[in-house]
Amino acid sequence: MTDHPATSTGSTVDVPGRVRVTLADRIVPGGFFVDRPDAPTRTPFEGSLSDDAMPYRHCWTYAGGGSTIRGELVAMLDAATEKVFVGTLFLGDRAVREALERAADRLRGGVYVISALDDKGLDKAINTVDDDGDIDKQTEYRNFRELTRRGIYVRGYPGLHAKFVVVDDRLALVSSANLVSRSFDQVGENGVVVTRPADATHLARLFARLWEESPWDMPPDREHYQVRPRAAAQRVSQVSVTETVGNGPIWTYAAQHSILDAISEIIDSAQHELVLASYSIANMTHSLPRMVARPELLFEPVRRAIDRGVRVSLLLRGRNNVQASRVEAKAFAEAGVEVYADRLTHGKAAIADGRLGALFSANFLTDLGLVGGVEVGMRVDDTPALAEALRYYKHVIAEADLAFVRDPSLGALAKRLYAEALSRWPLPAVITLISGDAGWQRLADGTGPVLFERSGSGSVTLHSGQDRWLLTASGKEANDGYRLDPLPGKTVRSATEQLEAWLTTRQRVPEGIHRGLCPAAFVRPQAGR
Image 1 (cartoon, rainbow, N blue to C red):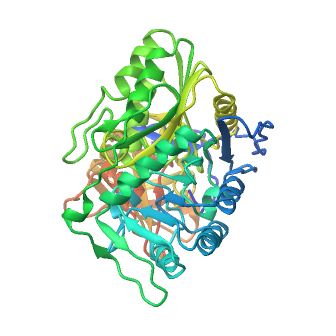
Image 2: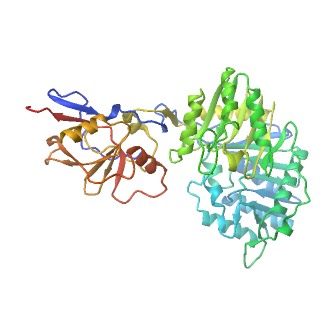
Image 3: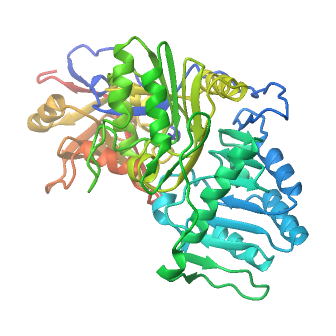
């Protein structure tokens, strides 16, 4: 929430001879991500030294410092001697693109990339559930086009959200990180470097299957590019992909939901401690348009774990602009889950008792995550990589910069709500008010949030319930008081609905307009005073 200079800090002491309405005491129903006042300064995550011969090696990026994903990936690409397979949503990091181009030059081709693209660009459905930050999707689309000019084969598989790379069927990297600089320098990510050839081969077979089934093709061309559809007859794959047993690759693909199966098994096995992490969560307890809620996928197993006495922690990206995420966080918190939030986390994981666990690309969503789309992960039970991942998530949780609150007071929410498009209350904290009896009584009897909009001219509109008022200074000085006059006409939205619209809309606030929550106290002189 951005600061807007207040004309006075006001007073919170009751004024003799006046009636007082303290809006800050109102309860705002729902769940919200708020600034954590006691958040410690971020410190780098320091990984433990690991043996390159280990079958799985933890890799990460942390907002407080430290990253190994880019270095691991570039080294793998530069070591390629036969072929490179890449599945990714974005590919904007220059160092990675240059490593892919070097590999293509060295291997005279042999580099294959699948992304969620078609002839219109990157799949919009996927982009709504991933960390797009400041990513320019048209620039990303041009990045894929440029790869084809360097002799790299690119195909489009709409719905692909996986992030994995396979080199020579012997090495692989599976993570939550899109291949963009933001994922290597700023955003919290983690994953696994896979040195076990059998697992790398398994991932290569999945890639080959996706490659053959991709409906869009962007073939190499030094002079031109063209995204063209592939006929259904061309998209028949002869490659079989079977799900692994025990440690190894897991995925969401077609009717195979081994990431969900792994998460379910991990949760059901937890006895003491369960750590869950996701960028997005939706459709678990509350339905979405045209999508029925699926509590049996995650919510009910988690609630059973809590009933067994398991301490459950859930780390999320703090996004007030996504109503579904707040609704789900509230439902899980009410079930006994400890919800943590951060501005920059993007990792996904499920870890039970520090012993069983998986890292993956899938969000806690239905159609684009656990039972739909294309996702990839790794099951890494009882491995040093899992121990490192758990240590990583505990580090992130300890330094998380947001908190999640349920049904806060309007005053607390106005101070701490994480919403960059909203401003703080710009007028005195305590206002002497001139108002008619009916309007005053409606304000006094109201519940839920009270919102304000301040125009460039300084006029202030208040929203409470279905009512709107114009708040205007009755004199030249702040202590001269203000008038509260009802605005004519019916409101289309209640204040609660209006707040939701302000939080979730992607439209910019009009120039010169300031919006936010009004926690002021209004005092009204009694008759005869």
